[in-house]
Length: 236
Ligand SMILES: NC(=O)c1ccc[n+]([C@@H]2O[C@H](COP(=O)([O-])OP(=O)(O)OC[C@H]3O[C@@H](n4cnc5c(N)ncnc54)[C@H](OP(=O)(O)O)[C@@H]3O)[C@@H](O)[C@H]2O)c1
Image (cartoon, rainbow, N blue to C red; front, side, top):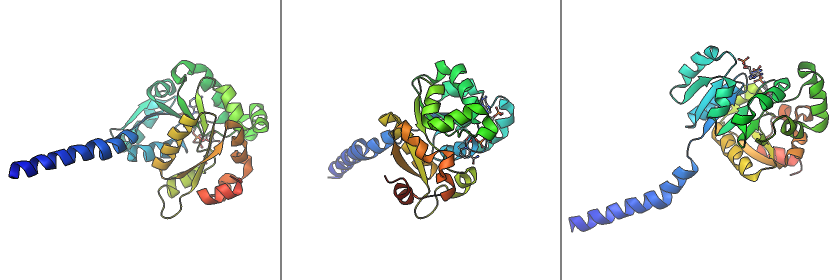
């Protein structure tokens, strides 16, 4: 009798592992995220993703300066150069001053080819010069795709202020929204999951051309909308 109950128990546990926990583990497999630009935007996201169980490589042109942050984040965080982060990541976060975007696209094209890249950069003519004026005119989604050919580009985390990334992640009640835009459905799903893991609500706005509706000068970031408010605001 004891043996029968024991066997039944083993069968039930195995079925649960295969059907239930197994499938959720597959969905929640950690990602390797290469972070190019670990400043006001990249550093808090590195922390939130490490806390969610992902592995990150934070990068700098002076990598030794990031070692204290990596030490603080623990064994799931490494430090590298931008090229090393581009090679390390299955997914890339690009959070550099917008004027650096064309150089990143040129210099790391081989490492970035075919990868999902979350682009948080905002063209700001006052900081980035004439290239940013053209990008504002075109909309940052379409402009970035020109600068980063060959990546699966998603506009993400460009419409949230850095202090809200730090202070509002995983807040109680309705979370702050992160608008997303891309031409690649599977890339959007990867981005949406990383937004959720960082403690915010993803809102898929549409193709890259629609990213203009939440560019810096749209004022979306300043309004700090929840997902419901953002859908209303953008008529989604
Ligand atoms: N701050 C915000 O509230 C906010 C909100 C939404 C979007 N954004 C946008 O996000 C982007 C990043 O903003 P941020 O405030 O995080 O800037 P930041 O604090 O100045 O950090 C940018 C990082 O980019 C790195 N970097 C600069 N040039 C580079 C290059 N050529 N190659 C590789 N790395 C380079 C710098 O690292 P090293 O010098 O160590 O290499 C620096 O740590 C900007 O486009 C900004 O408009 C900012």
